Amino acid sequence: MNESNFAQRSFSEFFCFLSFDSTHAQKQQMSNGSSITQFLLLAFADTRELQLLHFWLFLGIYLAALLGNGLIITAIACDHRLHTPMYFFLLNLSLLDLGSISTTVPKAMANSLWDTRAISYAGCAAQLFLLAFFITAEYCLLTVMAYDRYVAICQPLHYETLLGSRACVHMAAAAWGTGFLHSLLHTVNTFSLPLCHGNAVDQFFCEIPPLLKLSCSHSYLREVGLLVVSVGFVFGCFVFIVVSYVEIFRAVLRIPSEQGRHKAFSTCLPHLAVVSLFVSTIMFAHLKPPSISSSALDLVVAVLYSVVPPAVNPLIYSVRNKELKDALRKLFEDALLQHQ
Image (tube, rainbow, N blue to C red; front, side, top):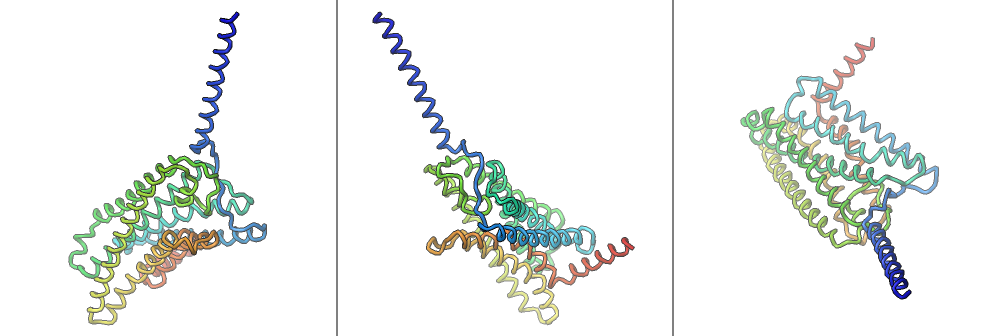
């Protein structure tokens, strides 16, 4: 009888241990963020009228970006006179702008239209990866374009040698490849962190800083280390761009003819304007002091660096560029003739 009671007690303790271990494992699994199936993005507005206003505003910006960048891509691809290194890089820039704005704006429009904030776990990871990829590749390409302008103005006799077709393809591929590796590292590292501070992302799209706030593990320091390396890389490219333009302006000011100076400035100023808009908004978004940080301000700044540049870049490049305007005019004339 005593042996039977002992056996029953042993089995009871064993199953209690298994039950405790299973419960502990489930809690551990939840703390690791595996129970999170979706995230909640920051809403632009609470009232239905403002949500619909946001939808139509973003729809207009998105269509303008599609039209502008699409026209530049088509004009450069169809006009053989624009088959030069500068326009080859501009074509790549337009492709990156289309990818960048298509990563964030359609989802934001859908959420406003359907009055929801949800984005799936996989969708959030894909959004973070693609946005980091396009933004990094664009920044690298803008650095390459600064080098292109430097060689064209400061070393024109070596332009064909230094920027032949093969060299241009290699530099563009390096920009795309750097963006891919950079985004892959950050995405894998960010989504390997345990997330236990809820699933509300304090931004209208998935990006690294808001997701790090949801982490409850000291392993987030690993991602901080990657961000420090990224900041160093960004700063290095920024210094290269600044030094290139200092040399460019010194060379332009030495050009004796006013027409020559005007032509040189007309090819440099659009690129400089795009770089300034792109870099200043990103730096302000991620380096502003916490004392002035708020959800509304973060939202506005995020729109400035993720939505506005892809929409206005085609306008900046086409306003002062006679060759591009002529190519676009020819494109419209050919389309009208074919239609008639």
